[in-house]
Image 1: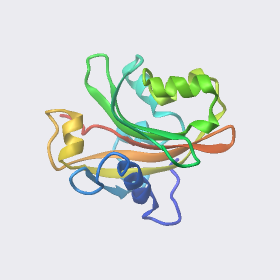
Image 2: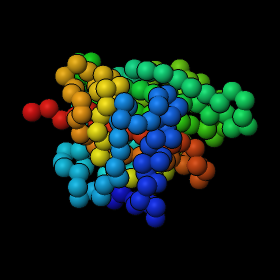
Image 3: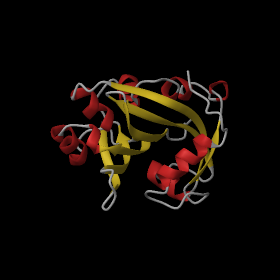
Image 4: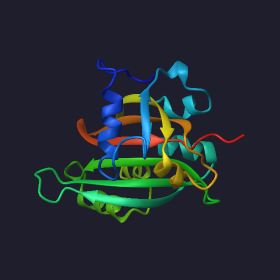
Length: 192
């Protein structure tokens, strides 16, 4: 299901470009390696290798809507493209981190009410876009092996270790046929 770019380093570059919005890319945050789906063990493969919103996959897995904790926000303040980005954690009802993510969205591709809902940071982006009824297509999915550095491990919680390997993906979302969203989504390391 995942798409392999013609340049094998493209997925790693995409991941590091998103990390750069909030942190210095490299081993202090995490190192990335693009991997084929066959190298991603279950259940991570089933959670990552699809062209649907991760919000939907994670809600299905946990059987409930997820909480959102915004770690940091960024926006384009001087450019011509009104993008907004946030670094987030999706949380199970127990408060356990079930996903780390970075999303960057071109707010000119959504109506004012949807843009306000995105900026309010009350719901995961996928849920906002679904609830707005926007025509959306998840594409350019590439799977990653992720070795967490100290900063990413700290976000996953005190039980995370460094280095510890997990999996994630980079993807893009088109809204109404226009590129609008870039995503980095990482699962916490699997326990026991």
